[in-house]
Amino acid sequence: MRYLSRIAMLALMFAAGTVLAGTPDSRPVRDRIEASMLVTGMVDIDPDGSVSSWKLDQLEKLPPAVTELLAGTIPGWRFKPILIDGEPAAVRARTSIRIQARKLDGDNFLVEVAGAHFGSHKDADVPTYRRLTSPHYPTELAKAGAGGTVYLLVKIARDGSVEDAIAEQVNLKTIASDPQMRRMRGRFEAAAIYAARRWTFNPPVTPDDAPYWLVRVPVDFIAPGLRESGYGEWSAYIPGERRTNPWVQEDDRVSPDMLAAGGVYPVGLRGPELLTPLDVPQG
Image (tube, rainbow, N blue to C red):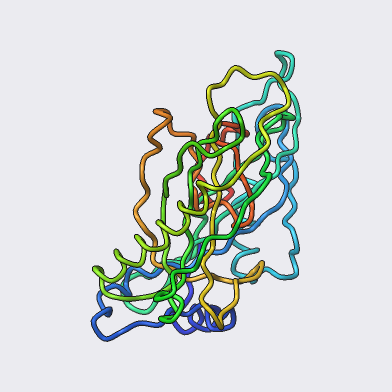
């Protein structure tokens, strides 16, 4: 883990255009602000589960604090050996890593690896989207400059229609009082779910007797006049509470905010299993 001063952290957030605006009655909420960055790349895993090599995408866009943190962390990861035809094998896994900066006491921020998602090494036939219409931006929230991300969990029927949808988590990019933020989350959630119920998907081609399929779909609401944070830029937000998946009892170990908006992510595809903590320096 690394530490950044408040001045350095705010400079990074201002550069990304993601510092949150607030009102006088929102001051207690400010200590709950988090900033995160989603970093993607590849990890090569040896038959014994150790990391033989790794590569980050668009390295030149990543801040030195982030590259140094990962360079001291990833080589120390160890995975459960992956069996192919019953034998331990070397595999390459696609990964997305969430770097988080959160406020400590005083003016310092702690920068750490908060989560990682590893893609399955197996080819899989999964649902793909046919039509994903964008949700209507709630007018009053657009006028107020409010933004956020709704992480949807979508239940797909066998004909490709949406049988049901819930919001697993709603992160806000606007500071307000707690009652105001509850209303904002509710409005963004309702708009996203209303749109999702009209989406259609292509069911898997391979014969499958599953009664339904589950996917995650992050939906961004970017306030007028603002822009989405680019790769290698910090995004500041007020995290929302994560809800339990009502259709699956076992936790699939995937945090919804590990997933980038604009994609469809099947639930239940397990990638390599990490045995060591995420943020323990090598050696």
